[in-house]
Image 1: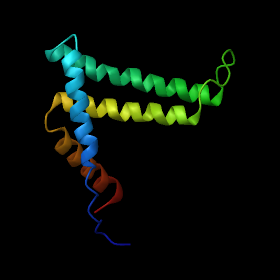
Image 2: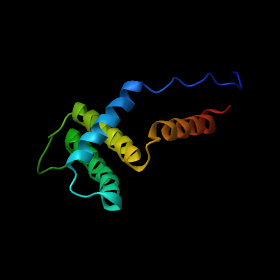
Image 3: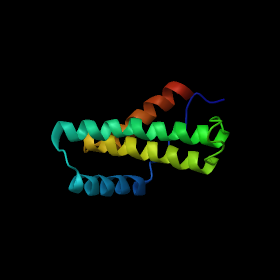
Length: 115
């Protein structure tokens, strides 16, 4: 096993273009600006995580009153919503979101996988 890791693949530019577009769309219609708007966008992440939990409970039928209400495809979609919401919150916090995320991912990758 080599001590040298291959370089990570570059993040798909399309993701960041979409994040920028969605951020602009959200900014155009948001009722709160400034610090409050930023905080609300970050708090939105908690709501999305709750929807993942709801989908997992529904996919496993853990609520006896409701039974099976979701599928694992629903869980996947909710996880995607969490990831996208986090990227949008990061982009709202800094215009350098792509670089911040890529740098953080590389640090986690090296810490976890070595190199």
